[in-house]
Length: 305
Image 1: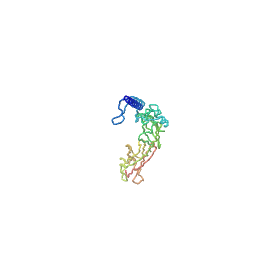
Image 2 (image 1 turned 90 degrees about the vertical axis):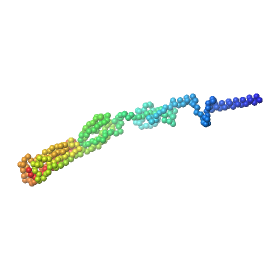
Image 3 (image 1 turned 180 degrees about the vertical axis):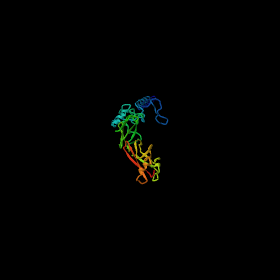
């Protein structure tokens, strides 16, 4: 009877050793810690070794805000246009390095080798970098005195005419150019020139005139009102020719006949002539810069002294 018990003990002891060896080989816990949940699912267990491995992974990973940074490899950078590459190198905070799978998780954007590229809103650009010259809605006219403002930090040149210092205005006289070139730094812009229109002369008869009109009455009141129209009246020279008296009011000229100082002079003028009589006058308008010159004529009509 004792011998049978010894055999059973040896068998059970061998089975126990076998089970322990299998468990050890499989890496299972040898203590009494529960490794299976009540629902049959494996229970998550964090061991000191697992924490140590996780810590080593975290040390090698750096979280990067991808809304502010981009990933640029050295290989891709070498393929860029020279100007783009120079811009990237100029604005980077750290040297650009190649990205390998051992440095970054290829399934994430946690790349520690990201360079921030941004443009400061208040940074002033050199005039040579400007894409367009903005001088506002400006018009330049031929044959007159034009004024132009320079809002830039460098001189503005009206090529072949004048140069305007930074942040200032200047007046200059143009000729008959159909267009002029505005230059700021290395940038240029062509501005079409507006033509300088010729002046116009308008006549308005104010007094009654005819065969029954008396000279004494005609010479005591305004006979004609002459109006000169021009886009630049300040550069006009207006002259009247004939026996008239002229009174100017802005661009308007009141013209009164002043032909006879006495009845004798009137009789000498009308001797041998038939009524009604007439005496004319001429208006000449000259643009002193453009050279435009126009003339206008009109007459006083009368019948007796």
